Length: 96
Length: 342
Image 1 (tube, chains in turn red, blue):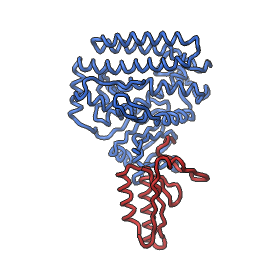
Image 2 (tube, one colour):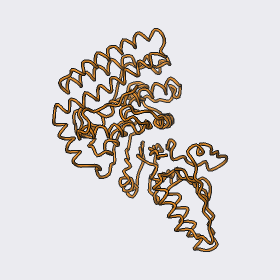
Image 3 (cartoon, helix red, strand yellow):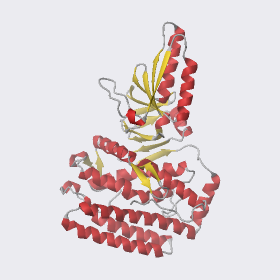
Image 4 (tube, chains in turn brown, green):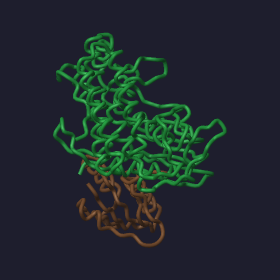
């Protein structure tokens, strides 16, 4: 499945900074950072269960927000990107 | 949507691969060049001077991701594979079959039949687009392949199968150059030469076969077979005989077809190659990348597996055949069904 994860995590204090880092790291393990707080994740359903559970256990419901967009395979084709930081497509040719 | 596992190719000279949490990071001169979650990877192929941390090596082997190291020319230097997976009973059965001339013959025969009939299907297909004066020559080669297929059906020993395989390969390669539409001297092909490849086309074929070989070895190890114990190819220390066996059905369909289309479509030009002092030809660093990108795109294409009646991308085919081979060894199937191209 293809999920777009967006988050706002308050980093007013050190606890917030810690949540922010942990959420970003969990997303990095499973997907590709396309903007500072936006990740695209192509996952098997079982891996999504793990990631979602991890994110929900890290965030603070009173201070942060998480948004998950579930994208169908067809709609995933319609994503356009302009400008800098063109993200990696982990399903395309991986050649460096 | 099931996730298609990918191969990471690292061609950066002096690249260093390490693990960062659950991702693989490629750095060159301390600069991060790529970061990819391990869950997307099936294998990692490194070309030239590429290093890998022990932590990453451990994580890759635990996740069943195969790592191979190639020389810049595409010659295999080393392969890292984790603890053997699968079932030891299956491997023992594989060894027993390898010692049983009758069962070995049946499997070797099926593999070569697959190879020759795929070669013929490819030639027949290419004949349609070939120039008029070339058509009869290609057709004649196809007829000879049919004779070899008949002889294969009657073969009574693995040696005989090997002999017919060699003759069929020679007949096939004798018309291979007629499939190339570009008539430049640069893309002249006078038959197969390896170690070293003596022309540009042979350089492309050798490089493609080296990549295919890795996919076949990984597919076999993935279903728990021992890639070193083969049926068609004789065993030799350091040789992955079963991977070479499995490759036979795929050489034409995955590599030869691909090489012909790369050249005919003009994706590579004569300047994309270097001749070394010993007369060996190889791809330049930049053209190797072009090759790999097209190769990966090609492998994503879907096709129907006739025997299993299911669609799958090209990259899955060696794995599916490895599964069928395992089933044959277990006697769940009477005969091994080689991969055949329609």
